[in-house]
Image 1 (cartoon, rainbow, N blue to C red):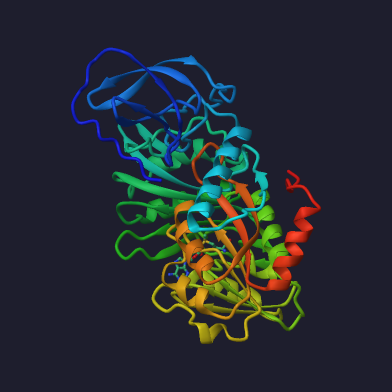
Image 2 (image 1 turned 180 degrees about the vertical axis):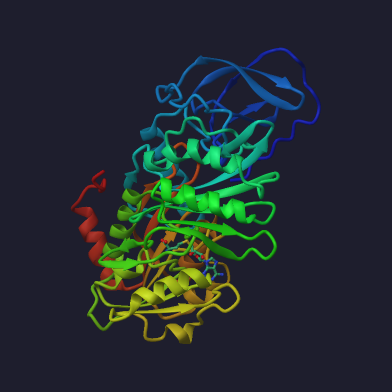
Length: 448
Ligand SMILES: C[S@@+](CC[C@H](N)C(=O)[O-])C[C@H]1O[C@@H](n2cnc3c(N)ncnc32)[C@H](O)[C@@H]1O
């Protein structure tokens, strides 16, 4: 649902009462006032509040009747740092809100009899991937996330980030402050791999040889397996410090991810996603082919391959190479392919038993229709965006797929982001089995 602020004139400067009817997609409370739809940050559904206008924007004065779901925001930077959108709502209530968003998307896509979802919520202090902004200021460095529509906020506290990554921020500010290449703004991707923190730095100017020595010394001092740097000229990435091999295990297989590789946001959520995806496969013989689309470095590929053959497609060269390098001797074939420009067509999927896809935020795009038109009976779709799910789900629904089950995985705490693993089928026997199983069991909550 898209709601638009249409208040054009300042209807007055005094306080007025509002009842918050729901949360918009950005996590702001939604209310009606004088025939206009207003979005009010910091408010929760069911609350009664006093607001006033600051220009054309409504602002909260006071919550007069708080929701039972209201809690004190745990982080002192909340409201300033843009990393978290909703900290005044309890985490269980937030999980329910995210679940309702996905349910509404499925409903809008045309699915009826939506089964009860499985749900999983990650724990605080477990985020193992974060893309931070760097800004040089007089006398120092700001390292953190952007404020909502604004400059970076120094991350002096964070209830998301894994402590092993958070502990690096302070020494990083010191070394970054000494780099000649950091003439203005830069960025830093932090990934926590099995081998340890993996850092990828972007700077506005090229690294000097003194910068390279400082980063290498930093890598040794903090025992960092690898520090990489993205050249601003051509966006190429090179290693500037490596103290040991970089490794990450997916299922039983050890891989070596490239710098700034995509990883699921937390390790425990990755396990929940993998578990739901593997369990979502139909029963397979070892020779049955599962095609995996948008495979990254192989997060799902290698666990899926324990059930049968996997043909995995990924667009980004470095990720596809990582997957291919680890595939040797397994039932896995990796391919680099841009699935938006060159989607797999129905005839490419002719002997495919199941498809697993984990598309980017915008959804499966040009791959959706050929997939829906293929003869594949079973699809596991991993969504990170309810709006894209609604669009892609509608195509699957129109092609005759039923929704067998879905699992919401909240791996982006205190944000509006939501990940969902959905199992679709148009195999009448499987649909019948699933609906009779469902009528005999309660909704599942994966163990946290
Ligand atoms: C949400 S990530 C999932 C990756 C992987 N399944 C995982 O769990 O780690 C989406 C993946 O789609 C890839 N991708 C984005 N656009 C693509 C395209 N046009 N063709 C193929 N892959 C693409 C990205 O590089 C990324 O690896």
